[in-house]
Image 1 (tube, helix red, strand yellow):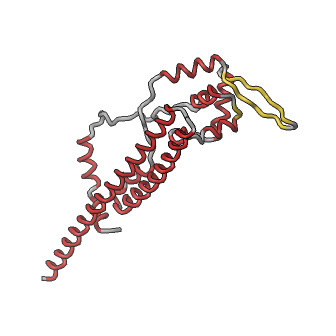
Image 2 (tube, one colour; image 1 turned 30 degrees about the vertical axis):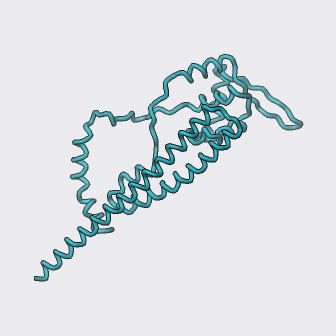
Length: 229
């Protein structure tokens, strides 16, 4: 470990106390222990508002642009469909094709009313689980690791920006809903802005690390020189 990292580690308690003074126990930064998360049943009903679908169809729909804003596991879709059926919000019918049978789900009038009610409700505040940012936060113990995470995130955001830009262009060519096109365009703009900020902060942090390292090196050389006299 670099001497600068050791020095940083020794100052952790001091830095934590200083930060605690900036952020009191009850502040605007306080968040719930269990941040709200939109229920998977809402987008399922949204897809069924457009057309009936099988469970497989719905899994594919989650690969649409909504996948950039909402991730769902395959194992959560079928239990949600069963719950929606029990509550009378969707109905199930079986369609046979030869020896194979498909379970097809359709939304009920009650389900449509429930979906529209949920649609009108205010959305919960944004809460992002970003593993790279958590690791960067604790990388003061080894600043070079922060640089690695920042650069990796920047490259990933650049790639996602390009994908979203192509998606927006394709949606416009296909005459997709302007509302959906606008939200994907917003995702592209946010991702692009994040990539630019990461690039700027990466360069800034790299300079600061180099300055501190040179300062530590000069102090070490001064101590060696003083000890040799």
